[in-house]
Image (cartoon, rainbow, N blue to C red):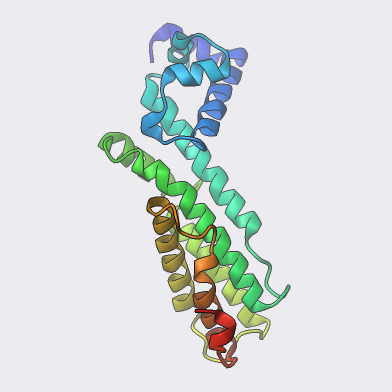
Length: 218
């Protein structure tokens, strides 16, 4: 970063504006992919001149990366807030809620990755940041799923011998596939509706209950 730009960014008002620019860019990433985001659009949304961005960031990629990390971190926090609490409602209802939260998380993350396909250097930096301690990568999300299932097992609400690790991996994988389908097939059902038969089967398997095909639907 040039000496003058670094000096401006180090000032309290400079740090405030830098955070504002990141926040604005983060908000725009909820509406468009990274490859569709321009410095002009960010500047206009923030109410500043185009060149002001370069007083606080070395280049456009630096700002986009900060916004991507902030967006991803926020999405993971929202997922954690939306996950069910073991011992509340029924296991089946909780799995439906968990599946829906996983689909929404992965559905929001896919455009971020798709928008970086042609930007290998930026994509690699983003993936490194996502797997850092602040976010924890996919393992952190999967750990949340396993923690919920393990808590249900400790409460005795799952059947003896139920494999919560395999169940968590399956749920994560199937919701990821559903998110991809929704991204590329506009006619797909919203949320996790298409996954209800799988969720019902998983709940029946984990709890040791008899599976009722009619309840699961076609």
